Length: 191
Length: 198
Image (cartoon, rainbow over the protein chains, first blue to last red):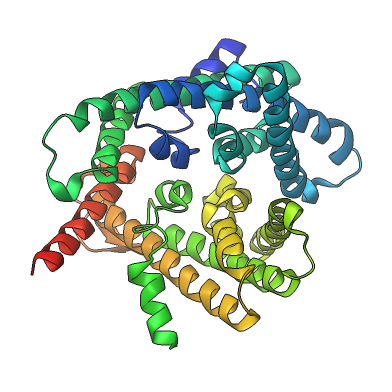
């Protein structure tokens, strides 16, 4: 991926290699917080915030600490600790700096620790050998793609609620079918 | 006793189909039955290790820092499993790719550490890890088998349908993962509803 242009990296992460629908990263929040368009937008913003910061910090840790010292095998432990503490820090910071934003993001912030899209992004940045600008663009693209499909699915599910869905399909199964059709559309970018 | 627990892991509290835990690997690596089973076994190993250590240390870890402690324990076992697979099962390691380090964020493992191992004895925690791991492995194997049969007409690499027949390739591609899991969940709900009415 490191030989792609910046636009291509953004476009790949957001659309034809969409983090959620094609690479299956971040399915839990994708199904969990896609009942309302409003809350899915909040989740998207929180993820954008954490993804950008986490990517930059983990990239620098890898470049200046783990790789030069030959400590690559500690990558998983370091990255998950960085993400977990970052989420805590962001939560505290947002709470102090902007109570309105904190209220809007609410319970979504702590959930991001176990969002595999953030961890997956951090690992991909270093295994694909991206430089720091590419890492930043990759993070923005991933967050844009995540928010886009989250809001799309939330819109579909809001409509599905007023329709008569067969009982066994109601809830998660029909959301998965809708996600499958969305994924079909996103696969169209490659074909 | 163990039989009852086994039914809990496979059916009543099945991690994938009932609790909807660990859906990312469940959808991503089940393009065929063998990768699904491999992922299931790797996750089971990590679950066994983390339940073992968490249950042993449950009285030592201060409650305030328990989640970070659990994460470090889990990450240690994920690294061990990853290194072992890279050394001895390289093709499987390649096939599972980024989803091996991502076992660390599988909510099933943190969930079992928090909800079960930190409150129960060593023996019960190990049994819980084994039955939950078996449930997870069977679910992934089943989903992988369905997608492999529908997508390429084979099972564990053994061709069932003559190669000249065109299979529904979409089931081996990302959209097929969502659709197969959605239909399987609907089928389980249908059975549950029928049973309640009867």
